[in-house]
Length: 473
Image (cartoon, rainbow, N blue to C red; front, top):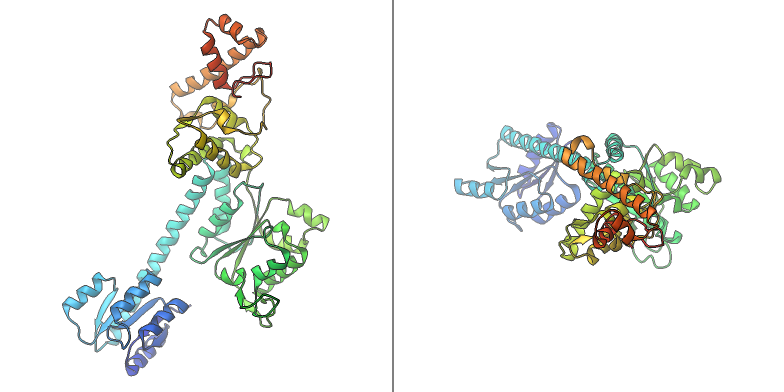
């Protein structure tokens, strides 16, 4: 696409000559003669360079430049003056002008400055895109965790983001499907265009089509004005259809038509409206099985499933749990103006043993509440989870989870020994309590420790004493 140059000049004869010169160079010149018209063109047509006369009938050229840069900070602005002076040139450059030209304009000089401005703008865009791509992958790991599962997920996202494939993001509720969809958008060439999310399960069927495709004024009762749908508003960007399995079959048929034709019709409209949208869809259900049962259209499933990414449940990547818990603790501290520092060992045990049916969303809620209740350190009682665990608990439970969460090769010997001691100490306590029939006082005497220490250890390790009592209850 040819670069668009907006020319703002009072004199039509000058504008006409510039117009012809630029056309011959393969550029797309657009000419206006007032500041108001120039700013409207900046809003509507997003030019690549602005060439503006300092003296205009309504707005000063310097003011046009400031207003234009407020709309597009990277827009190169070349100021032109019939009465140039060094002081004016310095002021213009300090204010953000790309260059400052004196009349009468010379063809070769104008074109040289314009092409230099275009090159610099293109370089800025490439650097921003590269920076965003680097940050996008890092951000996904920052938000989801350091596990190998997240690393593989990040690699898949990076691979498909560079394409224009429709992507189906699958995973349990709360696992981070929208986060993955946003990362795909952010790492793609569409990153500077809108990312619009639609929750297909939260919008009534009667309103869903209007939300997606828009409507004309008077299309139905209450349609008192024209409305653009999300397909139009996301033009050039990405449209995220969350919980796509909840979309009614009738709406699915219209979605398929929009995807195939790359155009939509507003409700009540007669003319097609072209769309340039990448569709990303998410579901917490197996769409293939739904399609086989007939509760989801097979053709829509195949159209959306050009590439599928499965977000692993939190219980499948336990090494991310403590990382995320600490991150959510820091966020909650900032929100609640608290300074909770850490988790005690019983809380760590509980976090790692829990099943997390609500995934990351549930973890964040649990930690946020615990920070509210805690003073200095979060305890297992303050986590207040519903008791679903992955491993059998009780006296025979060995906390091998205490050794997880970090690569042993990255830990110093002292830390490895400490973790091993914790495991052995808990096993001894469990065995002695079993011998003592769950009697804590007797177990303390057998181990030659005082009762208070015994009680503290039981609470710290979350050990059940066999009489219905738990140390972390």
